[in-house]
Length: 153
Image 1 (tube, rainbow, N blue to C red):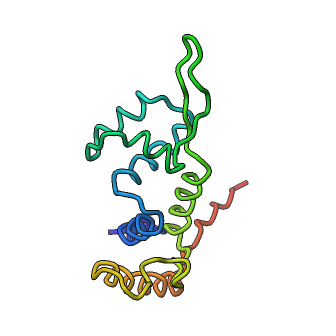
Image 2: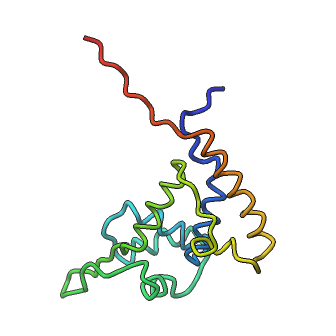
């Protein structure tokens, strides 16, 4: 079996746990943000159709707006429906996930990673150890960008 040049999903669980802890997001919230990232502009119905796939929560849309993950793009006027988009904050989180999947280290300082605080849960301690392993792995196995195939003349 051939291993792909970039094993992006090897540490997905660790990266996901870190992002949820750092940004105080639930799994469902993160899934919705990842889905909406490529949607651009969306309406409440678009949000609701994907939200049916994740755990049910009354008022999730309003809460994500209040917390600054979703912002108005266009308010409802006459026959035109309101449109929304992900905020810069949400876009930065998704881009940070992609960077981590591409081998960027997860910070291990107390100020940048709440899982490295002193009084954390057992799960946080387990994931903290895995973050250290992941960072060491990424240092020794730097992900290499695929080389473009040489053109034949």
